[in-house]
Amino acid sequence: MSEVTDNTDRQRFELVEQGKLAFADYRIEGDVLVIPHVEADPALRGQGAAGRLMQGVVDFARARDLTIHPICGYAAAWLQRHA
Image (cartoon, rainbow, N blue to C red; front, top):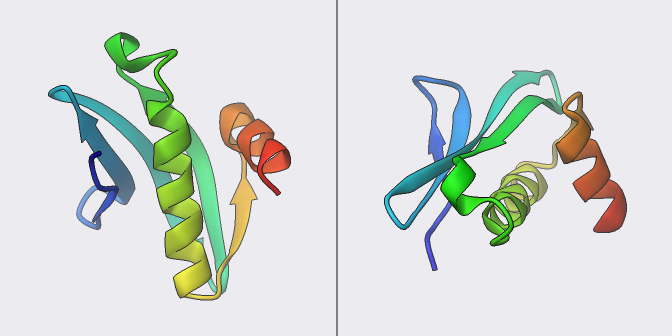
């Protein structure tokens, strides 16, 4: 299984699986991790890649005691399902 990485230059979390990219754009505002956009390559859709990416985002936020503010509809729905 691939690892979620923090691409600080592009301000996004990335997950590469099968040579394809899933990513979540972010910005940090104080102690809040804002997620405005999550996207997965169409070849990864339906395979759980975006969910694994979101779990990596949650792990990152927890390790830094950040609150997640999802603007992206997918991120908000995923967080509600995985409270």
